[in-house]
Length: 244
Length: 84
Figure 1 (cartoon, rainbow over the protein chains, first blue to last red):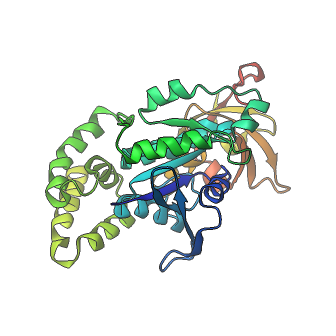
Figure 2 (cartoon, rainbow over the protein chains, first blue to last red):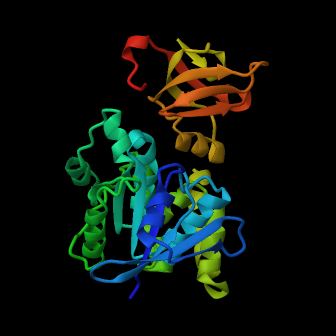
Figure 3 (tube, rainbow over the protein chains, first blue to last red):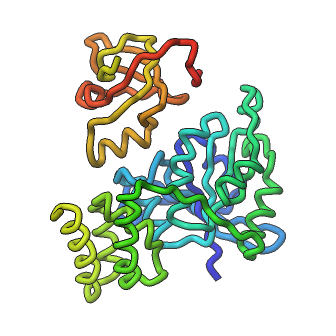
């Protein structure tokens, strides 16, 4: 069974503090294969099971094609962790939600962890986790990794998500009619190539965005024999967007 | 009145109206918080006036004229500031 948990988040959200707290000294560090991006993974043992936790590079986004962002994106899309924790800075939620929404377009198995809650309270910021959870459609947990607040609740939620006791319905951004129509056109083609292996709506959006680095990754993911099929989808997309 | 971001003075609060950039750079600026509707503050200018530092949400980000001259915004009154 896949028991991998990925940790994603903006820089300076205390993601690594949380990682250290969850894994303790059971860590392996190094680089991602072929990249100059630091890689850390460790083990977390809860009441129910032992999980493997992977600390993804801290990024503002998963689209801008820096090496860090590619590593984080590829891990979530191609390695498919069973669960992704998105760590947000409680004092800067508006900025941080960008990444959370991007991850929620890629996978439904998400827990939003709002870290630095002690600092936010000092600044007079009140966060309604229940309401946020209702609106985002995924569990939202307030915590402070530094003060060890909210950790027990986080561990319980991880266990419950892993045992599928919690069902999520991530909020999906609705785009303009034009884009939504194009997504609808593309989705069946993408489904034919990837089946349910990869999130079709997300790939459709990346194709519409003309994300070259992702095309290359998709091609190597498919392997030599199937490459032409994705090229056909990309080509038909380009024809539609430029031909009109 | 709408102006490009490099034309405001230090201390001005600006509501971003549009980005005339494409592709990766547009995406990057959006990710950093330069989103239409967001209010940013001109934080500091370097001695020669380029780059200029802006405060976006709680972060200071410096942009060169190459980028800032393609972002449009309008100056707003101090009272309606929603971000510290």
